[in-house]
Image (tube, rainbow, N blue to C red; front, side):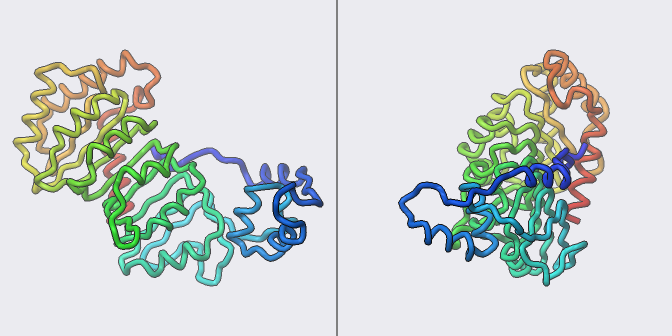
Length: 312
């Protein structure tokens, strides 16, 4: 189950719609003189032209040429289809970036991109500027965001609070965070998740000081949220098993039971079956859940494979 997949209008559909549009010969009524608006239309650079076209039909271009990439994957400056000679780039579906060399190559890509309408964004980079993140999510249509540490986003050298990131993704359905920092799961960030339409939260690797129990207790206020936790070898196995035993003993079915995965399958089969039973009991009373017909073991396996493909 890949949430990056989505059904979008084809290019032929777009051409049909565009061919029926009538571009006004006169600019809209405004406080700006006619010749100023005409100059803006004729002399706008590609990024400015896109913004103007969003404002009013007068600014629509008869011929606006850009190279559209519905899916773009970048690994350490190696592009599957994109070259550095490309200008006026549009990315209208999925963008996956792994840049081990720093920020330079990613910055050049953003500079050459005039239109960004993403549904899926995977960022495995050392850091990025807040303004660039806002540009990548500017359409407001992003549904799947995966990042290696939310603390990578900076604004004038300062880390952008994690809750602000969710302000730019109103349609987000799946959020994956690799290398979870204790500061990420602030009370404000949890509140944002509770207010959102998020369906799946995937957290991969935690510091020893991370209080996953407190976080899970808070997120139970969003009962249909699917939470998947991947613990690494440094996390205390006994603590995870103790929490699972507590869920089973209390027969917690007022929210979808989280998924737990530890190295070397350290969670016993008895515990796994008991957790599956809790989930099944919850889903019986929530027939509209998108996870109702998904096999529990399959969901874990596919999620782990997806993370390995994106980051390793």
